[in-house]
Amino acid sequence: MTAMTPGSNIPLPTARVTVDVTAPVRLDVSGLLLTADGKVRSDDDFIFYNQPAGPGVTYRSGGGTTPDAITVDTASVPPGIEKIVVTASPDAAGQTFQGIEPTATLRNADDNAVLATFTPPRLGDETALVIVEIYLRNGAWKARAVGQGYANGLAGIATDFGVTVEEPAAPAQPAPAPQAP
Image (cartoon, rainbow, N blue to C red; front, side, top):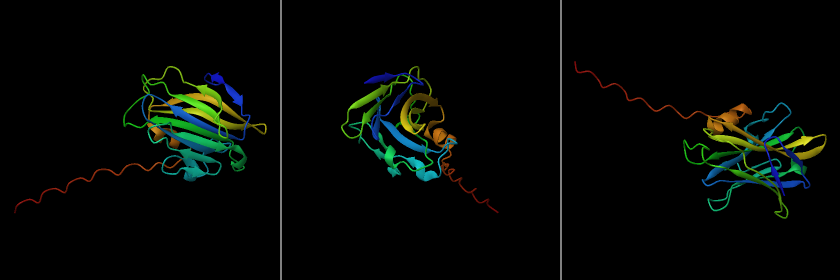
């Protein structure tokens, strides 16, 4: 097993790898399939609890008892997808990573053997992280430890990678009371 540091990478010895992310609080984990320009092809390339499967990538809920996970089957990733980023954000609204040390564990999806772990250092007011990338380089798949934080939550990550984020509807304003004649 390898303990990764920010920016380090490892070759993937297997076509199927699972990334789970643990922390002392409940996390939402998701995956984004990216093209060479670093963007999704469509919102269908955003894999998370409400859209748990995409081409070559699946989401598994831990149900609060085990960590959420993203599994990547590199043999099934469509041509043109060069990177899958795995993200994490605290489930509680407004929660930051201050004092929380999430750890990503990369596993062989077939036998659950641990390939590497990564705990991003020095987290603060981030509300979402790109924690790990699974990427294609010179025909071979690799994993990179990232640990890039975002202060604007998962919506900030999704927007950066080209996902359309629907803004919540503005609260209805009450109609003015009719004036007496």
